[in-house]
Image (cartoon, rainbow, N blue to C red):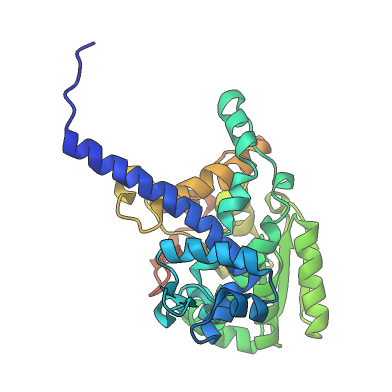
Length: 357
């Protein structure tokens, strides 16, 4: 082997980057804790305060809060005044870290880091022996997905997402049949059912926990036009039943995505519309170099989306299947007309509006 000459400057630059990766990975864990304990929400409402005052307001133990603040200060998330011994969360930072920020709350998403860390051993085993890690290995995933999607749906579904489809809101007001495939906890279905009482809504998901959550929320809202069905959506046998069908970041997780899309096409009326919201990316890795969350999405894909599909002897499509493959699959399923739209501020998703005619 011919020895390669080392570019010392490049070596030092990369070593520095790796130190940054280690710091930022550690910071992500602490931000997740800050979100789950409510510390960011508390600090956003406090004036500069001591660790004792912050802990008291958050109803937490001071020693833990003090050490957490150390990570937040050195991570340049929280500001510290050494003379007064007080800590402050700048409002500019709170805008990305608190529940009040809604869909812009990035602290919520850091919870995926410890969740994925819990299955690392199973992922490594799958690297060596094949197969995948099953859904059952992610006991908190349904709850986390619900928190994640609910904040987005509350802020955008009725006001932004549905109006992307020309004439849809008017049709929903008049009364049509709609279904959400892979509905999770069913929050989107219930939001639409409440907003459009003349339409009829169905949520399908194989997760009994998710279906139970959807039914519970529907009862709480006293909705008579929403129903939830526990079902493997690849076996959906409905034909020409629905005027409008949706999937929200659900297709790429499926064991048999092509079969699911064909089932959706069959279930749709000839003049119906299918809205597929899925990850905004290219099918070609070199075209994702500038994706603002490319590394994160490939990681989540490898450690959840892809592996849960492979655990079911599925295709293992993965979150980053990309626009080119998505269009191919939609066309093969029977959707001859597909338009892709984007929503300002949403760096996660493309909005595919598909019809059979």
